[in-house]
Image 1 (tube, rainbow, N blue to C red):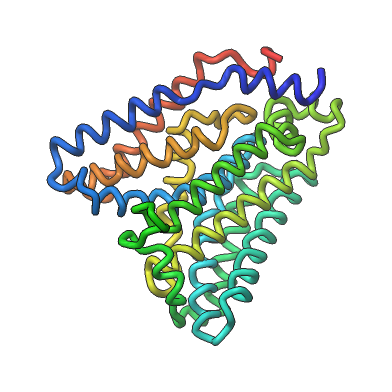
Image 2 (image 1 turned 120 degrees about the horizontal axis):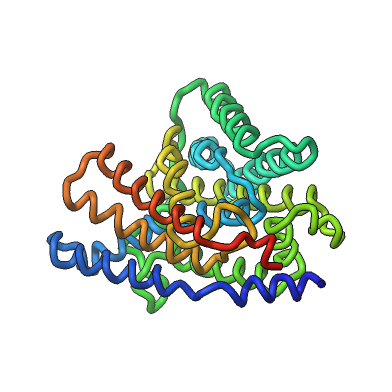
Length: 325
C-alpha cells in the first residue's frame, strides 16, 4: 500500500468536525445569554485576535502531535521570540532583519528538538522540556533579565483588534492565521510531505518499511513547530507593545488543549489543521466565557482541564489506527 492509499483511508475517516461546530455554537449561545457584551462586535473581534495568536502556535503543536510527539518548548520559544522582537527593534534593526532572526531562531530550536528526539529515540517530552529551559535561560542571559525595546508601529496595527483587512472587519493577524491554516491543510492532504507525517504518526515501523525517513519527518515537524511558535511570539509583541519573558506561559496548556478539543488524536496519525482551527475557536470562546463569569485563573485551568479529560477519554473507544491500516 502506497502513501496516497494510506492517507486516503485516514482522511476518509476524518469528519469535518460537526461536534466541534456544535460546541462552538453552544458556547457562543451561553455567552450571548449570560455575559453582557459577549456577542458584541468588539468582543468578537478581540476574541478573533486572541484566537489567532493561539491558533498559530497550535498549528505547530498539531504537526508534532501528528507524528506522535509533543512540544513543551512552545512557551519558551514564544517568550524568547517576543523579547527578541522588541529588543532587536529597539536596537535599530530593520523589521525584515528582525523577523528573519526571530523566525530562524525558532526554527533552529525546533530542528534541535526533532533531531535529538529521532536520532537517539529520546522521548519528546523530555527533550522539549530541556530545550525550553535552555532557551529561557539564554534569553535571560542575553538581556541581563532586563526588559528593553519596543514593538514596531506596523506590528501594533497589524495585531490591533480594531484594525481591518481591506473590506474585512477583522485584524490582519486573523487573516494571516487562517491563510496559514489553509496552506498547512493543503500540504497535509495533497503533498507527499504531508502524507509522510500521517504515516509516521500511525506506525513508525510501517513508515520505515515504506521508506519514510523518521529523522527527516520528525525533524521537519518539530522545526515547523518552533517556527510557528516564534511567529506567534513575534506577533504578540505588537499586541503587548514590548517584550515579556513569560508571555508564552499560558500557551503551554492552551496550545495542547486546542489540539485536543479540535479532535486531533494525541496518539498520532489522526487529525488535520481545520480541526485545530475549530479547537482554537472553541477554546477561545470558552476561556472568554469563564473570564466573563469572573472565575479565577485557577478555576479556569480546572474547567479547561476537565474538558480535555472528557475529550481524551473518547480516544479509548477508537480502534487503534495501526490495526485499521
